[in-house]
Length: 167
Image (cartoon, rainbow, N blue to C red):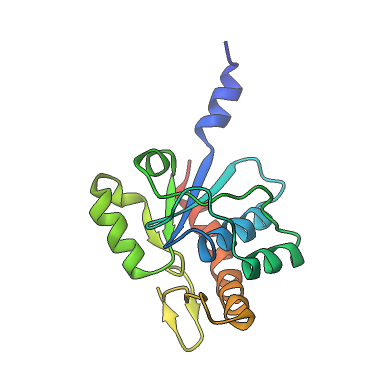
């Protein structure tokens, strides 16, 4: 039988899910960078998925290069589609774009209180609050660096929001 302290610690776990389209670029990058940002904290679990993802896809080479350069690589990554199981498990779900957010609301309306935009709590210069995380597909390494820079600014605000609204 688990101890009361262990059960209490499990109940306080914050389960974060990042969602994009194919779960090979933006959401895995957010997953890796978020994991690095909360390294050493055992109150977080982090995953990612895509609204149109096929199972078992590899992380994009540009995303992988950025994460590895920052010591945030995700070894053994395999893409996955967003599912009822993942949504139920998550305490917070962060969509990369307004379109992704709309899809989540349509697919899982009973969980809409968990859904937010990744940039919902950050005012990005020239882009404002609640902007989309840009899609880097087919745009080369500079576009992936822009995604990483956007996430660098958004992730601290997400952690602060989660810490303020959890437990």
